[in-house]
Each structure stands twice: as C-alpha cells, then as structure tokens.
Amino acid sequence: MRMNILFNKKPISVNFVGTDHKLIPSLINALRHNKFTTMNLVNSLERVDLFSSEAILYAKDGNKARIPIF
Image 1 (tube, one colour):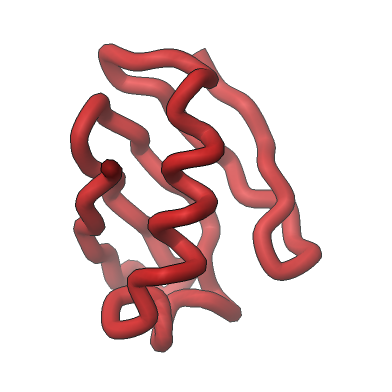
Image 2 (cartoon, rainbow, N blue to C red):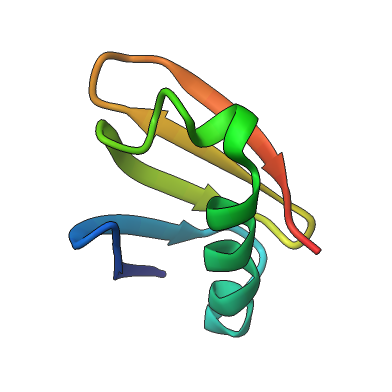
C-alpha cells in the first residue's frame, strides 16, 4: 500500500511494508525530531519505506537513512 504525506510542504511517498497508515503520526514525529538523520535529507527527501519499528528514507540524490519509529 502507498500513500502521500506532506512534510515541509512537500509531498512524500510512503510505502507501507508490513504496517498500515496508523503509524503515520509516529513517522512524522520521528522525521521532525531526528535532526541528525534528516538534516541532510529534509530538502531532498523523496520517499519513505515504513516498517513497524523503523523507516528507511530515500533522498533524490540516492542517499538513504534509517530512523527508528516509536
């Protein structure tokens, strides 16, 4: 399943892998508070693979990062 969310006024594609839309608030919270990981990806964040306990962030330049979801 796939869904788009707005983050920093930009649409970001979220792919759900073994989870559902109920983790979207936790994902947005993690994106806002994990400054170390998202500092370089905020402007180039393209898509997210969302799992039950973590998210993999993909940037337009090919970089990716993992952040925990609580």
